[in-house]
Image 1: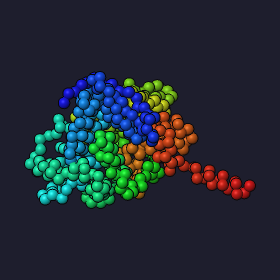
Image 2: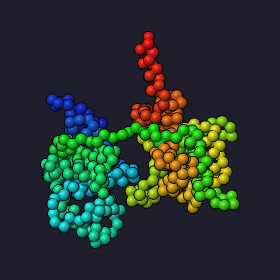
Image 3: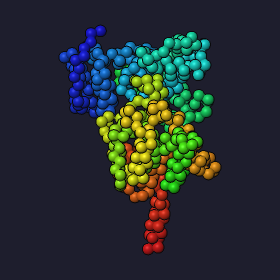
Length: 459
């Protein structure tokens, strides 16, 4: 195979010569022009994105086919397992750690169902471990396999359906059915099913792009997705009094005798950022002193440019559980500016005075100076709930997770009459998503509508 790194791309153009609308992707490899036609512009854009990302990560392109090496590996795959392995290799470099985790989770659920009935099938747990911790990782990240995992891998390689088998919808339906169940056999959550089905759909779309499948087999199966709930449950939202009581309670969690400072006091300001500034936990963990404008009087400001979401080290490039990423749903270099009230300004100033900052400027750190783990701050939060809330409230969904402080903040702003575009800008949402997700948390609308109807009826 003769390859070249000299690649050039053109914008997609509509093919006006065809009777039905079609779109042409054009690119050049080593001076040779290549093209591929798609029925829709979206399919063409997806293919062009794959080509550009392969070029960006330094892949060589084949002069004959015009495809990068990762795509050729997928085209050469004869079994579903080999194709999925090539798909993971192609997607891995430009996927976020959490996306890699989700991709592996979904495919480890579907692949055991896309197999033939061969003797010696390993236990479901062993198969999932083999996929999650070995097969569905790039080759250079796979650890040495123990004997039981190696046997499971050999069985999967022998039993995997061929790509041609996917043209039979009867072969694909078991994979969809597998997405609806948890490992214990109970029904999976609607959002989980939707997420996993979307990933499987994308794998098949990639196969269609590479002309390994004539069409996406999922489109031929009558299978209804369960209804998902996107709106925030209003029962989780605390009012300002409850929020402040929880923040006070945090200062008593793990408090040592003789005036020592406990775990809760070290983290109280981080939780305050989630409530008063609607930060996501990953954004709060990543907050640095240089991101904060904290004047002696009046309102301050936080300027966010990154987040540290937590994920298993297996999925990160650095091997750290917290990989620094750009802001969610924003470009890599985007920032978000959030005005913060004097109450939070005071809390942050006091925190810096008492605890200082990490060498890189991070405000919040573990006692050993590391990034605060989700297990640590969740444990502290649960203790604070038992101190601040009544037994009935502790048993309820009220502020069950630290993330619910962010929900409370956004709900408070909307109920206070802050225009939705401003709330969306501060919270890092799109306006449409904001109103859809927080629709049930906007108090007072029912009374207003009732009064308007009453006025019309009595007019």
